[in-house]
Length: 98
Image 1 (cartoon, one colour):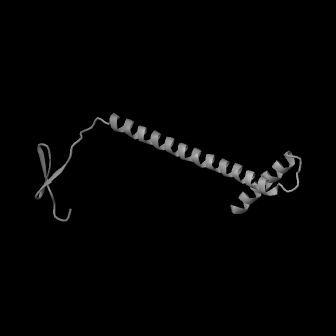
Image 2 (cartoon, rainbow, N blue to C red; image 1 turned 90 degrees about the vertical axis):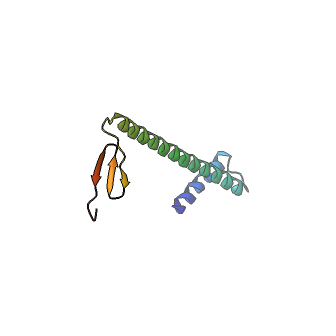
Image 3 (tube, one colour; image 1 turned 45 degrees about the vertical axis):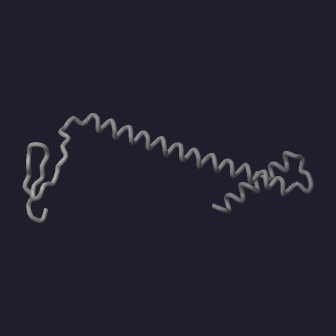
């Protein structure tokens, strides 16, 4: 991967050098400019990846919320009281080992 990055920077620096008329003694400046441009491209790609991931998470949360609101079954909470479980008006005896 580092080799690919180096080659991208090298290619871009060469393009800049050619576009400026192949001036002598400007290699360091062209390299710096290419490096900044390539780093900027990578930064935008990373930022876009984060935005896309966040959008996917938002869609998943919305889908779960939609499914939760569509479920109309009983919503009870079991409470433990000694050896029994209670959910409102019903009690359940706990079996040993469970």
